[in-house]
Length: 199
Image (cartoon, rainbow, N blue to C red; front, side, top):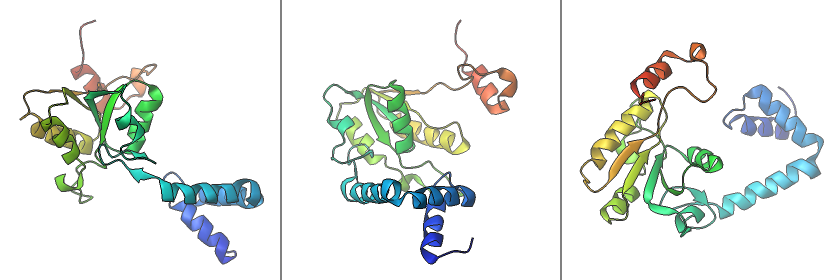
């Protein structure tokens, strides 16, 4: 694309966002530029306010305007039930589904030798501190069904197994609700068979 420098810069910055390639970035830029007062300026203001106000929760790693975050500070949440997730997006997905009434631990990634992410790069120490404090009775490992997710779960399980006062569980994997067997990949089918339970 060749155009004014401001437009090129806008398209380039939008294109760096996850899920937006060059064509999507151009479409988004055009939508913003067609209605700058209705779309672009409010968006820029909201982004500036979020950049100043949002911080990382020192307890769980969630993003919020308070520290601790609203989830950690909520007295109605079960602080003894900790769900470990890879990133804040996973936490938000579980919250949208309304399936977890405990608290969380956001790792900030998974172990990956190729990406240079090792154990020291993961946000695990706050979880270990909570467990050592005696307030945790169960840790749910809710990581993706990828090689990196499985490696991280195995590593975490080894670290957590030394605490004999807690239960360690993991989310179920396999056939999704409404899923047809013939469209699932081999790994998902294998996980579904191995994780079978009585009917």
